[in-house]
Length: 162
Length: 102
Ligand SMILES: Nc1ncnc2c1ncn2[C@@H]1O[C@H](COP(=O)(O)OP(=O)(O)OP(=O)(O)O)[C@@H](O)[C@H]1O
Ligand SMILES: [Mg+2]
Figure 1 (cartoon, rainbow over the protein chains, first blue to last red):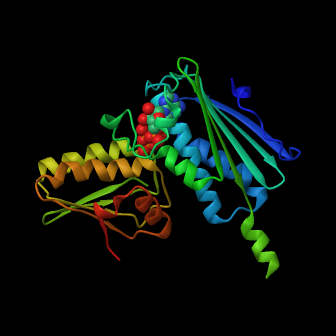
Figure 2 (tube, rainbow over the protein chains, first blue to last red):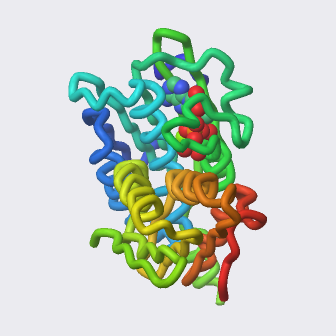
């Protein structure tokens, strides 16, 4: 299903990794730490690191509480695939959960289907604000794929100019 | 580091943990509500001093407490807010709901 979204041709892959983990909330922190460690060689600024961690946290949390309906079952798996092409990070977070009926509406700020779980409908808005590009593909009953891109290491480039 | 709660007069002070995500938020909200009900506090102060990470789950905690206390005239405050947390609060349109103390 991941392959459904057209892959962007933005140069050759310099590094990649794939993680699969149980859809339980302890793994939200694990996924953030893993992506942060993975992009360390790109010399991210603290701001960039924080942006990527927030976006990943949002997508993984959505997979756990919406995709897998907060069941907390180890049987349900979330996949995180990361690619680095030169200085561009691509992160793909996917689940085989319930899917989203109307992706456009789901992405509107403040739209949430789980207000009783104190969700505020800001997850997609944060992914959009903190990453350079966000693509969401979903099929009801099949699952959801969230693909994000961000150029990393602008800070070190500025430092070198000085 | 876990969150810490303290009641001073009519204020519930919540010292938030290092990282605020969905995993942590469920507990923080439940504990806060227990204090709000049992100690009958009217206002809530969120202290972000130790917080280095927050996602939309933090927005849920703040909005949820606001809904509980605002109907009785209570208010929600945020202290020790760095530029990162501030950006997240503003992106969510919370500037009219929480008072950010300098
Ligand atoms: N992986 C997913 N599987 C199924 N539904 C999803 C998934 N991700 C998001 N959604 C749907 O999209 C809606 C909006 O998601 P978004 O992350 O913007 O807000 P939220 O998760 O409801 O609240 P918040 O992220 O602020 O806690 C969700 O309420 C849910 O209905
Ligand atoms: Mg969300």
